Image: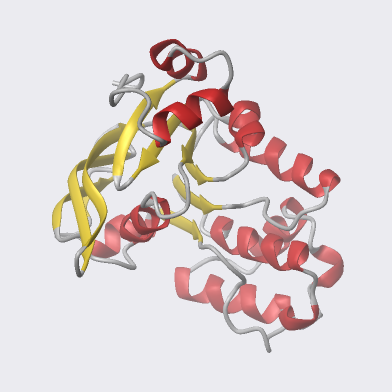
Length: 247
């Protein structure tokens, strides 16, 4: 075991001739990390490899000290994952879905009510998932990622489809959890990254273009705002920028 929650070394993934993730390395402890990049940058592929849904072609992933290739059960037990899109099993009620996921993860039934309250879905527990709005479905997915109280949360667009009040609640919850967990968020919302992230990683074409605090990313990219830095980093106006902030 180690104090480092997540350690990625020289991670690579290709799909035919397409290089989705190219020699990515970083480590992370407690805090909220925003993973930014244009469509096709490799963010979702990276998330899916960290969650164990995709096997890397090369490189190494360690979660709480466990190598995901050598000790998959121990490493995956430490991860909560909110993938892109709606939860599985749309014909299930929210309660049945959470009970099912909880049973797979060995979670006590009382935890279901706790995460339902955190995600503000208590009022729809008896409804079928397919009848819910996009915002509620997103919160059901968020709730299932919290069930086992994992030390590492991987959240792919966690506020997608939420109204402003719901978005603010989830963002505040993520900030609070980031005090004791490692949370990696993939988002297209630059203002969200500025609001909740302790650290920002910008990806483009499968590689990391910048890694550091907001201030560090702006300074190194010679940009006044995050949108300006994002444009420079993802259209090739500057050289690759790396600043490791969480050694």
